[in-house]
Image (cartoon, rainbow, N blue to C red; front, side, top):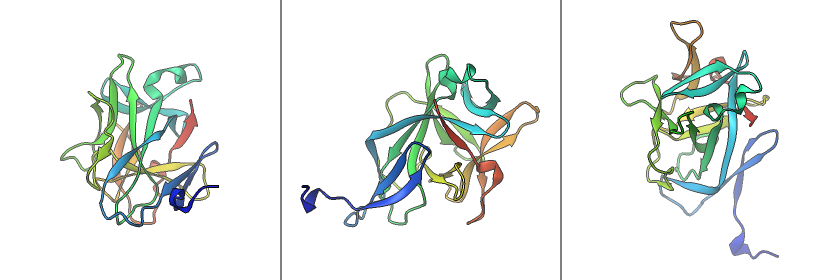
Length: 199
């Protein structure tokens, strides 16, 4: 039987079809930071409507139609690395960093663009994901939250707290790009709804 010192207080966070995620509570912690959850990384494909999947094309993040065979490519298989959220004013959902490997074997992180309120970039990753982020706002940390009553998710930026990863049509009808969109509190924007599918 485990001793009381080994017990952790947990808060229910997210349910996926195959996974249940819990957030460990830290009542005695006063810092605002994100330590990496070393054993909590999983790989998913990110899908929106019309059978479009998020892919990295060189250093651009966009949604493309994919068939079953094309979905085997690395450029649409996102690693979702969990981080503990020690922020005193906690947001909903689980703190995560999204990364993906391009066909040329370059790994990228999904990040907010500096100086661009709606910009999202694929930032080249020159070293492994950080083990520790010593602040409560970071360009690559998003809060993954399940949308109540659905099997869909949305990703809130930790850097721009009222903004969510969303999709938006570009000038070319075939181009649907990943953007950050401001969403009023308690409103779920249709363009921020995404499915996480097993690779």
